[in-house]
Image (tube, rainbow, N blue to C red; front, side):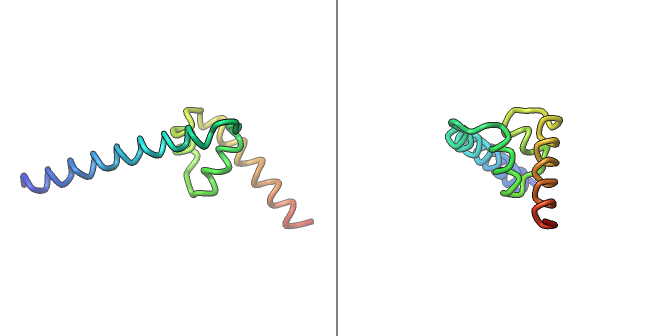
Amino acid sequence: MKSRATTEEALENLTHIAELLLKLKLEELRAGRSDAQMTLFLDALGCSPTEIGGLLGIPTTTVNPILSKARKLKDSKKRG
């Protein structure tokens, strides 16, 4: 059992490190970009609204309208 606990701890540590690196890279990418631009970027990468809010430090109630508006624009372009 000790081996399994060690493996789980190692995975947790790697996950934490990956999250920190991602946040640092996002800060670098964010320079001069709006929350809306970063939201659309992270959405394109497959992040959920909750993940986007967490990564950008903004509430999901801010993320959802941005995504909704972008999807409506995309749908209207497909139709027209």
